[in-house]
Length: 310
Image (cartoon, rainbow, N blue to C red; front, side):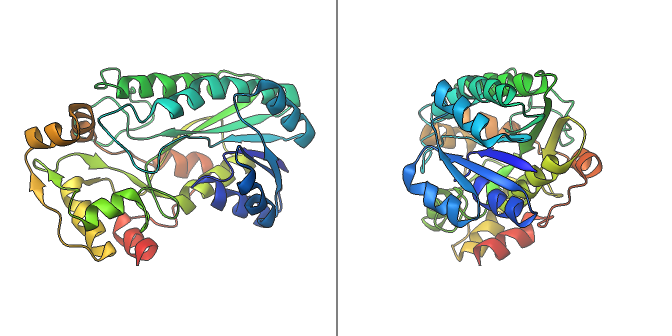
């Protein structure tokens, strides 16, 4: 099968290209950076150096690739996140304007399916149970997170409403593994080692994690089949911050995390980030297992952190 991967040099894109090539697919990997093209070619794919905001070049690249399936795994996150500023603004543009361009180019190229990345941690806060796909996104998201929710909602609506193209949306959890902020050389790991990543308040905010290999496997599975729709792609164990952060620190060989009151954390890193974290309650992956036939290689962050970071 011919597959076009937009975001082929990203944290999900790199293992995804490898997995698709190993499965026998003919892959074209898109990157906006010339220096990443050699990596894509070395993985056995054809590289296309294109900016998603250049409509003409994008359409030409997809028509040349003639893909049956187009994957949208584009983001524009900084290496270090400053939660006092809208660090999500470039990614919001990718998920709104960039999505429009990519879906239009997919349609022009004759693709039959688009599989796109969303997130599983911007659901409406409140309640006690982990989120399922039918739960609403966070309409009351604090601060600049509201813009992120709007961009994600746009992406999901565009991909899901582009008939006759089949739209599949994969809501990924907090990514860890190579190339992520939680990688051993990532910014979050550095902060944990320096004990600058504390447990906030009671540490009640519930996270759902996804290893990069598992995220890539979900995309690869969605290329081959599964009903159109939206799926949470997370591990089996949603966990409160007070549970997972000490394990993550241990896996890094760092000291135990400090504890700080919520009001102090809001002063230090900004109110929106803390309110968003404290309102999270994780997500359930049952639909992805049932509808895509996907199973996480790392079913729990407990083992995943040690295997990925050890």
